[in-house]
Structures are given as structure tokens and as C-alpha cells.
Image 1 (cartoon, rainbow, N blue to C red):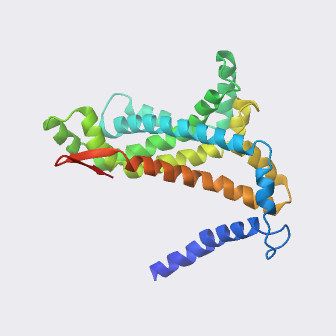
Image 2: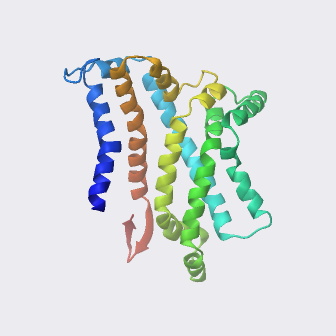
Image 3: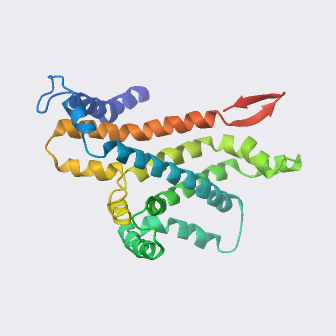
Length: 260
């Protein structure tokens, strides 16, 4: 019964909307039966589409890498260690989610103008860390809480170095957390429109800046094709990242490498 209910809900809220979107992208405007590539032709004729896609992928990549590094370090410290002011630090990490992002962005924009990071890709990468890092820290903190310290202490007792402990124990067991951070961070970064336009100043053009103006259009076929293009990028990024992680050796046993 639960399985049937799951598939009914999935069909109503996930499969059916996606299927309708795909169908609409391959039909003529105003028709559900006439096959046409009008929407996809219009999509690829859009000015700066490929450039914006490449920019979004580049920014998303660096934002994701920084999130993994910062989130894993801060999450481990908050989960496994006790230090003075820990509660205050934990609260401080959540503050960007409680304060309106526009208020932060305008303040940061002034500082970036002074140091020369406004209207640059680096500035956009840094501002994208504001709405993403708090989630990464929380995800990795929960991952390290579940992991605990016992296996790490055992590895240290057996003489394993910090690097060996990380690659052989922590990273494999934190794989679900890493996957969650990769997907969530890239989706949030990809969808940022306002803060990107403010910090980027129109010089750094991402896919969101090309996509969102189309929402005012009455051309539903073109919007459907654009929406699919916009949604496929996080999936491709996630799949590529997963393939890369599968190539990382994390344990050696009997002279051979095992991959996760």
C-alpha cells in the first residue's frame, strides 16, 4: 500500500509535470500534438546562451569546491570538538540564512567595489557562498555526528596519519553528505539572479540572468525548452562529480585498490 501511494504521489507531483514540460518543449506554440523543434531552435538562438552556461558551470564548480572544504572543516569542528564559544560560532554560521540576502549583498557590494572585486567572476563566486555555506556546514556537521570519533581514534592508535584517516575512513563514510552538498550547492548557485546581477554588474552573465527574463514571455514552448536546459545542468554536474568520486581510491587491501 505504501509503495502504491509513493508511486501515485510521484506520478502526480514529479513524473507528470516533467513529462508535460518535455512534451511542450517539442510541440508548436499553442499545440500539444504538432511536433516541432521551434522551442529548441529558439533556445540555441538565444544570445549568449552557451557563454552563460559555461560561466554558470565554472562559478558553480568553484562554489561547490569551496563549500566542500569549508563545510567539511567547520562541520567536523562543530560535531567532534568542544571549544569556548562553540554555540556562538554555530549560530554565526546560520546567520546568513536569517538575514535577508539583499541586505548582505548591498553591504558586500560596497566592500567589493573598494577592493576591486565588483563586476568580476571572483566576486560572484564569493557572494554565492553566502546562501550556500550554511547548508554545507549543517550537512557535514550531521554527517560527522553520525560518524563519531571512535573509528578515527582507532586509526590514529594504529598509526594512521591524518591524511590516511581522512581518505580511508572519513571521505567514504561521508560520501552521502558530499553528494548532498554537491547537488544542493550547485542548484542554489545556478539559480541566483539578483545577487549575481548586483555583484556581477551585468558583466558576469550567468544562465539565470538569461533565463529569468524569459518568464515574462507568453511563448510557453520556448520557456519549456529553457526550463529543461536549466534543470538538466545540475543533474549532469552531479553525475560528473559522482563519476570523479568513484575514481578516488580510498582503501588499499591485499595490494590492490578498491573504489567506492
